[in-house]
Image (cartoon, rainbow, N blue to C red; front, side, top):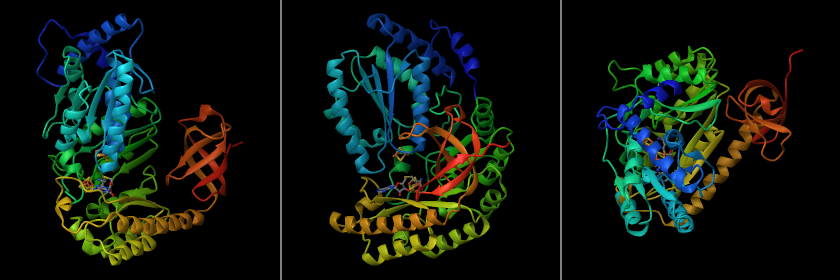
Length: 488
Ligand code: SAH
Ligand code: SF4
Ligand code: F3S
């Protein structure tokens, strides 16, 4: 991963009177320098530094992509701001469920009214929803005020697209079908100084029948382990103590690399990096979770005691229609194996209710798995029909009222199980990464335990970003109260 200083040098060396280089990332450094001129002209016109704001929808992958957008915008000379009234506003979109799309349309209405008040304002859209042809058509037709639209596969070309936006009066649109490339070494502006997400792979090959992600994120591609490990080392040097390795299915990491590498091997190498204190990862697909991974987790001192293992449904019949490639029994056996080897692990999951053809008996199976697996927490979603996916074409879509009824039942069991799980957790000493000042009581700090549970305790904000020992004194159901242990 490139250092900030090296990046500055390379951008300095760019000669704008030369044609743009063909090779990446040099081409994008060229356009960063060019964008600086456009932003400077804007500054002169406005009499102040223009501001930018990136608004993120969706998952951790999108959050990491947004850090790349922030990085480019700041390199180009924009001042970051948290308000959507910024001079340059970009929405990084999600389309996993229809309500994500609806939310975006609402925000676009708001953006339009802001643009009418500020004629210098520019609005851009990117991310997963732009890769969806019907959504893109609707935006082109009904939201003509948008200045720039691009997708997930060409995000690395953001500097170049930014320049095209400055050079064109009409909407600039650039969407690619797919890509097999991974471009490294673009600027990144992290949200937290002490923790960071890291992409280890992009795309997904699983094609779960309800899911749009493989269509909008393309085929699975793994980053080379050397690149990932170098990025971690650099982050640690910059003060990061906790990393989260990101991929749609981290358990299939490295299968197509030459030579192949397993996810467990990558974790073992990350563990060796001095100064790195904690490792998390998202997301695991149950069908690919290996014994090797369980072993590595059990022995590790750095991998956190938390595993997110999406179940989706507890009914073998529905799981097969979902193309998940495991059965109810296989899932439960896997959970048992993990809990036996790593007793203090916290297990969380994702559940979909209302998949086509789901009956009351199928929902009972899901509830049965929730009780038996004793999830520490679960995200429960109402099935959303995504155009172009196999499930959208299935005939027996579940009526909304019935799905909602089942959803409420599942949610009740999820909450009851989660409450019981936290109640079992013992007070005592534990390590917490201090993340922020408590939102409601500013005398308290909020820290995250290895198992992802929060603890609130009195302390000085200077501790933010440090891992401290706390005495957990009170179990409050979904979080702990405590105090810092200071050795004499
Ligand atoms: N790659 C991850 C999940 C990515 S999407 C994995 O396989 O675990 C995050 C969650 O959104 C999924 O786990 C699923 O529960 C939910 N989801 C995906 N498509 C959905 C749809 N069409 N309707 C409702 N929920 C959906
Ligand atoms: Fe979607 Fe399945 Fe891929 Fe997850 S593994 S992103 S649910 S297709
Ligand atoms: Fe949404 Fe794209 Fe993530 S569809 S959940 S932002 S991969």
